[in-house]
Image 1 (cartoon, one colour):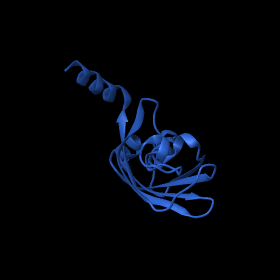
Image 2 (image 1 turned 90 degrees about the horizontal axis):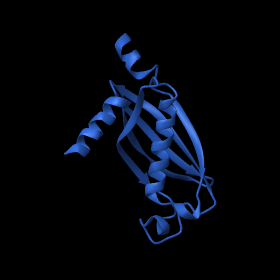
Image 3 (image 1 turned 90 degrees about the vertical axis):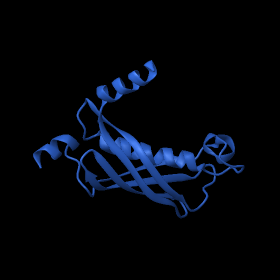
Image 4 (image 1 turned 45 degrees about the vertical axis):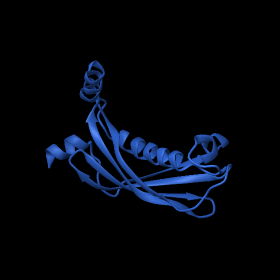
Length: 138
């Protein structure tokens, strides 16, 4: 138990974070290339979800640790036009060693626009970047 607490920096299931974003023209499906309409692009929405989970966990980790995304499953269920605010909510559901599992939701000012699951892994920054450097050598 002490080892797990040390490894995950005091994170615990049930922790939540919310963050607001405003949809700009450069974040539309038409501009990003994921569709042909001027509505919030799914890849941008997914990036916002990852950002909120990353920022929440980063508050709790040691300086030599960070998290990396492992997977994201997002059901983008309603469109959001340019200019509307979007609130992303992430809730840490499970901790399995270094693996963090989040339930996610997104709402615009009118309705729920997305829900899903996001997985992140706690990593040692230097060890991770050493692996990246080694990969470049090949």
